[in-house]
Length: 286
Image (cartoon, rainbow, N blue to C red; front, side, top):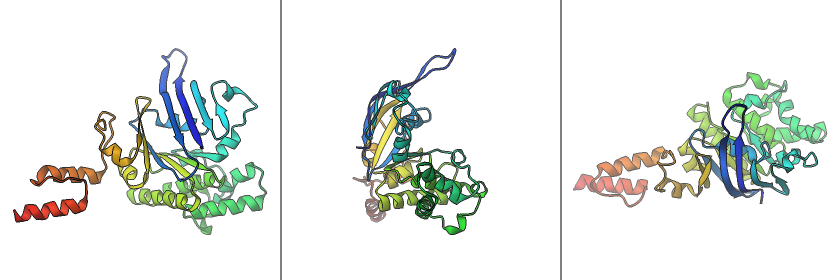
């Protein structure tokens, strides 16, 4: 097991402000290999707060985060004997804005920084960096370029490569497609799929886009008002009676199919394009 949360809650407190319980009594498990999970929920539902508990960037106010062989609680988080760096090597978090993770003068130096920081020699770190850049689709022509002079999509790839170079077991991505054009979004999601197929790394991606959830996720976690209200397959989610209550949208394909069902006299028994075509043919001949 890679990540196990046991009744984790987190309360934000600020001077002269009412405490806010961002996540409430969340329990879940994520395997170290071959998971492809979408973490979804409306704005303010607790997604990003939850994700930061996955690699000990935040401590639970109550409950326990078991991260591989390390137990993180409100008490142990403060214990200097509990080293967080090994956790963050195995569970890599890529922030929504790549600028938060880019700081070196060249792409290769930026991606190689983490392996060097973990004690590898320059040659070894550079080889890991080159392999990570290859995984995200950036060739050697990028090595000497400044990461700050790249496009938004390229910056995202470099920030992801910087985490991949640590060879994590679990990769957590906060809104990885935000701010990108549709083609760049599709390309990046295909990159994640390729990464998992080649490395068996478990991937957790936070998103608002239900199209990516339907197309790529094998499992979906839904946060609503700080609580984990659903843990299951995309198919089960999009047929769930509480979908609208949780302020979840449907993928475009299902919206279209439901619209067709509404206007056709022949009911469709499943959300299937073949059934749609057959229904249309039946409608035309009736």
